[in-house]
Length: 236
Image (cartoon, rainbow, N blue to C red; front, side, top):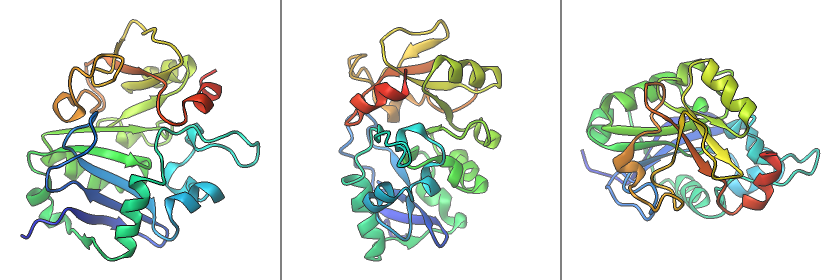
C-alpha cells in the first residue's frame, strides 16, 4: 500500500476523523513523531466552528470551548487557525483518501498514536478507537466526556479542571489528566514528564503514560497555551 501522510477514518455529514503524520515526522516538540487523530467539523472550518459554537459537535461539553451565551472566552490551548485549519483545508481539497479498517494494521502497527490532536475522542466510533489501540505501540488521549463515555476508560484519560472533577473521575475508575492553576501535585499525581515545567525530559511518543485506565500515576500539568489567561477562569 502506498503510504500517504493522512487518511480519513470516519465521516458523517458534519464530522470527520482524520489521521495525519503517517510518514512518521512531526514538528510538535512535546508529542514527538506520533500519528495525530483530528476530530473536525466536516462542513465548516475549525475557525468558523469556534466562532459560531458549531464546535460542540466535536468538543462536546468541554469548558475550554468558551461560552457564546455568557461571553466566557475560549481557553483551549489549541490554536484552530493553525494545524486544525490546515488539516481541514487539505480534507476539503481532497488530499486524504478513506482508510478501511482492514488496512489499519498497515498504518498503525508499532506506531505511537495521539487520539485527539483536536476534538474529543468520544466522537470517534468505539470500534475504531479499540482497533487503533490494538495495533499501536503507544497511545495517548483525553476526554472531557468522561461522565458519559465509560467505554473510553481503557484508552484515554479523564480531563479534569478542578479538584471536584479529579475526585469524581478517580472514584469512577478513571485515570486523570488535570490542568492546574498551580504546580502543586495531588498525592496520586506526577507532573507531565514531557512538559516544559518538567524540563521536557521525554516526548509523548516515548512516554505513553496518558493511555487510560491502569495502575500508573495520574498526570497533571500547569495551565499553558494561548488560552492560559482565559483558562484560569475555568480552573477557579
